[in-house]
Image (cartoon, rainbow, N blue to C red; front, side, top):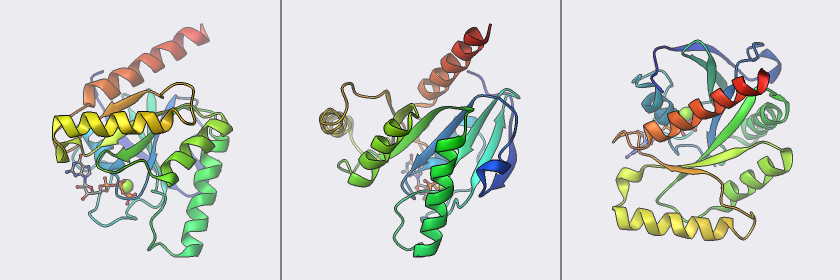
Length: 203
Ligand code: GTP
Ligand code: MG
């Protein structure tokens, strides 16, 4: 898919104030600092559409971006950042939970995990919760530029075997690097395919 336009629409902490349009929507979620905002910039080829930072906890709101005038991409705050105060964490948790529970336009969530780390309970628990909530999801491994190809392969295989302890099938997954532009076409083509299916469904 070619990205012709990518515009910021709105930021807020209340799912009721998210755009009312019925355009299909794709959300990016994962631990703080995993690279959600960077990935959004890589996918859209816009250097600073989504705000990124070396310090975790940068994205604090639900951010909607309109792509090609026909779908939304959503940047969310990260979970699991220890230094965010307990009360802030609760607020994040509440609106993230509401977002996934209430947003009917959401086609798929992309759960980002850092390819360098072993499977973390916080990510596995979140995927389990998405499953229980009935939200389809795919996994995006980030920061692939930090590992050699063989190590990437090993880490992905480890991750798959842990997933198979909970899931019957391994969810769809993508290997990406925002700094090296890896995985962009795969993710965009996947979204394009889902958008096309939605159109067919509505005929
Ligand atoms: P929060 O908004 O705080 O939850 O973080 P985030 O998940 O949006 O992460 P963000 O995109 O702000 O990136 C966090 C840090 O990781 C930044 O220093 C990025 O430059 C770095 N980073 C993101 N993606 C990559 C990548 O593919 N490769 C490398 N080497 N660094 C990356
Ligand atoms: Mg962010």
